[in-house]
Image 1 (cartoon, rainbow, N blue to C red):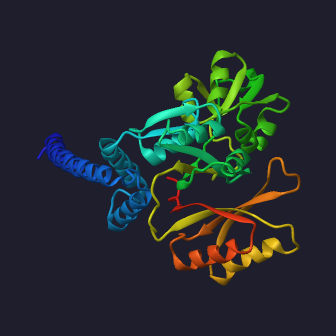
Image 2: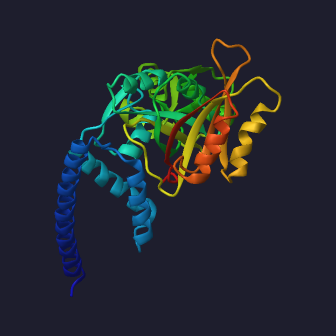
Image 3: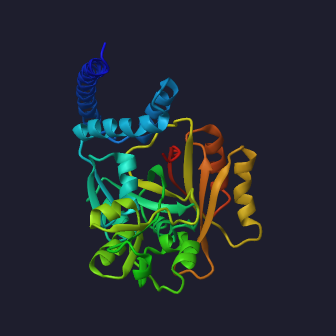
Length: 362
């Protein structure tokens, strides 16, 4: 058989496979519509991250290649998102405008079919969900290079919202401008976190060039689009969105630079997935050893604390609120016992949510 004929035959086989995939996708979508009808009837939550994680875990276990897990997950993310949109269109608030890493996190978690609600500040993300103008919100909470995002933690003190999922996003910072020439850059603009994540690169390649903070990376890209000689630090999506050129790529100081995002909202509690986190907010009495006594029940019950942060309580000098991330689900006996005992030893304790631990970033 001639090579061209053999390739044509293989392509016809791919066409037949594609037809089967299309039929199966629509079959899956019809079942999803039935599930959506039953959820609405029982007033159950449409979005269930615990269920989605179990799907990804099951597919990874079944996968025999040649496609690897990192290739399979984005494909099924879009399949799940498309089916979910048939059950209900979800409105997702995030720090805008379009082109931010927050938007990338939204797409990572909800796929391309979600209705985007970009807002000008992290506080506004909380506001949109609290007032029912968005179904969920996505906010950054921690970066592997620069640590916590204080504005997010501070808002949890007064917000009634719970955490329903987390996202880990690998962050590639790029220098964007109207020019491709580094010597033409007279000012660098970006979000404070991004400037900090690229501190060493900027010192080496743009020493003495003024740096200016912006409310978001996308806002910085908009400034760079309008102003000759200004460069923005942002992601590739911002370059596409604002028509900018990539002067330099991957300028973050740490190659594994990762940001952790939280999904806010939800009208139902996640079931244990077998790999979960529980976030807690607590305040302490002013006594020596108060923090040690509160933490003892977690050690006694074998519950690991993956994160502990403190933030000053606004309007109450020298008083602090503590944020803890626990390994495990609040419905699991060791975590439940530890929370109950800790609650008796502190001034206040609020469970912000139990949710599936994020899968490693692709």
